[in-house]
Length: 314
Image (cartoon, rainbow, N blue to C red; front, side, top):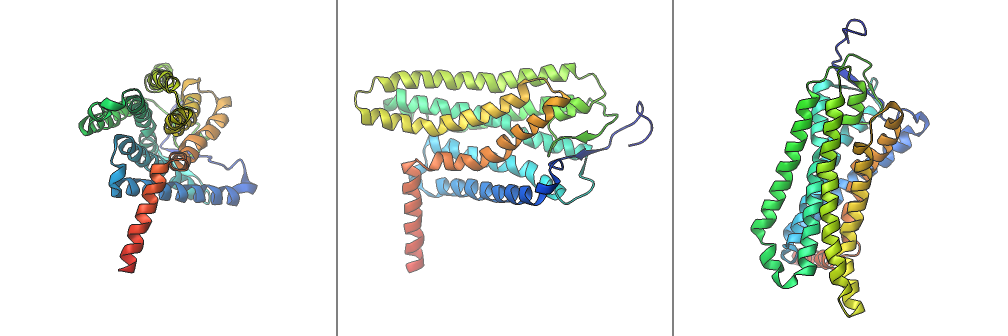
């Protein structure tokens, strides 16, 4: 930083991270590091399992493997810098490093689209089971996934281009553990009304519309399940949806909280805690949510163990 308050150009930001809790530094570092390794291990294991087991080569698990890939990229784009900042003074990051980190953390936009695609997949499987293979063809699955990535990338680029137009004259302290848009808007000395409106509109497009698609899909799903006469049939149908619904509630609940309310100095502390939830906790829990009560995943793990044992025995 150079010059006075009005002509200062910020070239580096200070990330406060969790310096508010100096006595808990070692504990927080250990907890976050453990959760990071579990997130990476569980998501990569799930991707490899789906890839290796031919019984899991279905639309549902194709989308799930992409969700695990997004969660892996998501957590890797933000947490390594946070780990180094635990024992580093000052906890600084360059402006370009900040924008790159923000861009990759915007993978959450792609995850919104992917969760909506997964809801449509459950709708097709339960409401039109006889036409499921035709409706959810491999080509359509690839197109929906590529569309989710492109749409998320486009939304991120729009915000990034607008962010690069802002001026930062000081202060340069970010009360967060990574560079996120709400924190940068508070620090900018430029007029941020347009970007705040854009942030809200993109949250509506990706968040609210995705939730709307999911709600419509599950409305049809619930109506179809209630028509099933047997209790066992209804229970089986509901069980195929509970994991996805749990992931949707956790992800959209925390994400919309951060990006749809106005950014103020008083709200940034709450944003930080909500960000911990959707950037670290949810990526770690997603593999468990989709696996613990999933018979197909459990059977696939057993088959992989048998294959590994037979190879070792030979």
